[in-house]
Every structure is written in C-alpha cells, then in structure tokens.
Length: 157
Length: 431
Image (cartoon, rainbow over the protein chains, first blue to last red):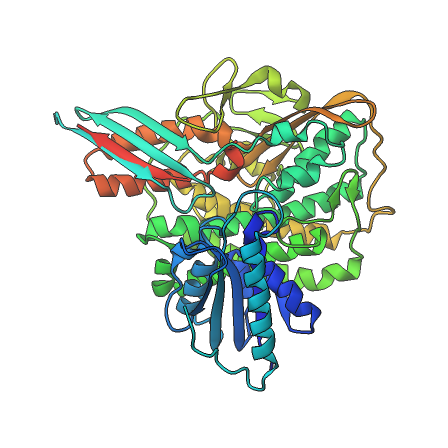
C-alpha cells in the first residue's frame, strides 16, 4: 500500500496553485498523486479507503511567503484560518473535521502547507512559492521512496 | 412599547457562497432599516467578455461560480445559439438536461445537509451537527456525490466541467458508460426520498410571505434547461422580452445589482418559485414525496424551502434516471454554430433560480456586449423584505437569537454572493 498525495488549489489564483503543482511533479515521477479543487465532500471521497494521505495546499497565515508548514491532521484540527484561499468556507479544514466526526480519516493524514504570497486572479507562482514547491516535492519524493513511508524528520514548523 | 433601539449585525455571514453582511436597525420596537450588503468585489465579467470570440462565454462565465458552472455554461449556450439562429437537436438538449440535473443535486445536496440543516437543529456548523447527527451528514454527502458523478461523467469533471461547448458537447457518452451511473443514482434516489421525509420533521417556523414568484415554465416538464418565463402575476415571456419587464438598479450598500419588475417591486426566483409555478409537472415520485411532507401545490413559507429543495433533489435524480433510461447517443456530439450579427437571449434555471444571459455579436463572431443576471441579484431585494417581516415577528427575541433567525432566513434562499457580485456579516442596531 502506498501513500496518496492530494494536491489542492486553483490554477487561476496565483500561489493557490502550489499544491496542484506539487501533485503534478510527483505524479510525473510515478508517485500516486491527484489534484483537487478543495471542496470538503470531494476531499472526503478522494481519501476514502486510503491509509496514508498527504495533503499539499497553499496557506495564508501571515508567515513569510514560501514558508513550509507541516501539520499532523490526525493529531489535532487544522487551524481554519490557514485556508483563506479555500472557496465556499467549506474546504480542507472542514473536510478534516467532518471526516473526524464521521470516522472517515485515513490512519495517517499530514498537511504540507505552503505559505502563499499572491492569491489574485491570474496564473503563475511567485518565486518564493516556486522554491517551496521544489522543496516539498523533493522531500516527499524522498520520504515516499523509503519503505514504510517513515515519519517526517523533526525540523522547523 | 419598548423605546429601546437595537442594531443586529453579522459582519461576515457564514454558510453562504461568497462574502456579505447583514444590518438590521430597530427603533422603538419597529424595524427601521434592513440591508443585505454584498461586499464581495464585483468581477466585471460582462466587460471582459467584450471582444472575445462567441465560442468563449460558456467557458469564461462558468468560472463565475464553482457551485453552478453548468448553469452559466448552458445559459450562455442558449443565448449565443439564439443569436446564431441554431436550435440544438433533442438528444443534445436531453443530455444538457441530464448534466444540469447533476448540478441541482450537487448544489442543493450541499445546501440542505451542510449549510441549512444546522439552522433548524441549532448547530453553528455542519461539523458540530455531524458529531450528534452523523447519519444526516453522511446521507447528504452520498446524495451530493451522486450529483458529482453525473456532472463528472457528462461534463468531464465534477467542478468546472470541460465537455460543454457551443452547439452541444465535445464528446457524448456511449450508453454503456451510463449503466454504473444509473445504479448509483438509484441508491441516491432512495436516500433523497428519505431526506424529504426527514426535512418535514424539522422544527420549521411558521411564516408566510406574499411573493411574486418568477420562474421558467414548460408545458410538459419541470423547468431546468429551458422554458418560457412565467410569474404568479401572469407574465408569460420569451427570453428576448426579459429586458422590457425587469430592471437592475445600483444600491449604495451592495456591490450586487438589485433587480425588480419594471412596473412593480421585488420578486422571488429559485426553488419556491419553480415549485409554485410548476409543482404539477414534478414526477409522480417527487409529487408524492412533497405531499407526504405536507406541501401543497404552492409554498409561501420560506423556512420550508429546505423541504422544497429536497423535493427538487429527488426530482432531479428521478429525472436523471429517466433520461439515462431513454438515452440515445446523438449522431454528432455538437451541431455547427456559425456566427451572424445579432443579439441573442437565453436563460435556464440555475439551482438558485433564473439565470439570464444576453449577447450581442458581430458577423465575425466577436462579442460586442454581454449582460448576465444571476438569481441572487434578482432575489436580493426580496430577501431584505423577508428579513423585515421576520424581524418584526421575532422582535421579542434577544439579539443573539434574532441574529440566528435572520441568518437562517437569508440561507432560506441560498444566496450565491460570488455569482451576484458582481458573504455575510449580520448587524442588528436597536436603540
């Protein structure tokens, strides 16, 4: 059983595409990775029956653009404030909490949040976020190739 | 009589699509002012369509809304095909109706179970409700999933489908692709039938409004992708006559335009209007469910909209199954549409109500002018009037309970503020 990477975002909203870009790059190297727009019911369906799931999404916490946040969504609720870029106020954080209430969370559920700088209409990542996309892709690539998909080495946020 | 003054406000309304706020001012026990403020910035879609090719509005306008892109695509197709003098053949029209059923199920499914139900059961969110009532949420998710499956199969993907084009579709499904979908829809139809019964058991406030209902109407089917415009006041219009009878006005407190009847006031579109003008054309199963749930042929209680919406979900699933059962693959997935200098008018019934598009194009197919009137801007004035009556009836409630009741009243009409700007904060001011 291999882990599933869910890249979340909107290609037409600048840095909000970061998660999608990570998923595309990983898939090109043979990793199980899919893209989603981030609506809660779609995410619950996407991880249905999966054991290990990694979410990658752009976040907006006020940190320096390009900052990589790593959170264990099984351990505690994701702070909803991170996802200002989600549509309809019924996005990633809600999907996780709804999944928790309904007993529909994967055994392992991690979030890589990439701090975005620009969420206005239009395509293209800012350079800082482009760099973070490369870093997250490389790290996941490395972790997912190791047998048993080891936990992330402790460092930073 | 109380001489106090109160202000009730919500600065960011939750469980609606987009960004808006509500403000209610009460003076000496009387409702002095009610404003639904839509502050989501306008997006100028109509202006950016000018100069684009006549084939582009279905895909461009679909981006106005992540919840009802099919409505935008099909209203745009209807208007541009009208300008070009093309009528889609029946098999294409039926396939359009099928994908549209999927969008109704997706949109209503989300609203009933996740956005509106918490109001009736006293929860601040679907998540809080899911802790105590997981089965309700689980059923809602299953129903919505069936809608997604229709849109994904016919439209290429569940959100922002890519298979719709002017003249029809890029590709029409082959009949055997629809078989597994039919099995899923049968299960969803059973859940939807249960859901109608369940909505009838909710504690529903007593409250009637004297609405002027406006919806499409079709002689032999419940209106979705086509019809003439009908109203409880007796209108019977073709799309080209819309602008003669309806006007849009700017108001200082909102970024969305307010629509009203040219020779009258506000009106209501959406599920209550469609139902009032067309309940006789529901399928027998949907009619039976409506009757069992205590609905008559017309429903004027906006708090019962959750029942009507659930009846429409059941109908859309029943109708989708009927369409699949009689599906014949079109000879060609789309008909050719050649441009000509003309103005075209089109409309369909988006989940939230009438969605009108008008395009003027030149002989080369360049869009010269576009007009889009979404359901929420048509309903905005009427929602304010609902609030006025509901505040008056509930003026004895404390501010917090009154605020909750007002939010519920706004969600009765599932406003899509993203579409109409062209979310919600609530403020009650009593002194």
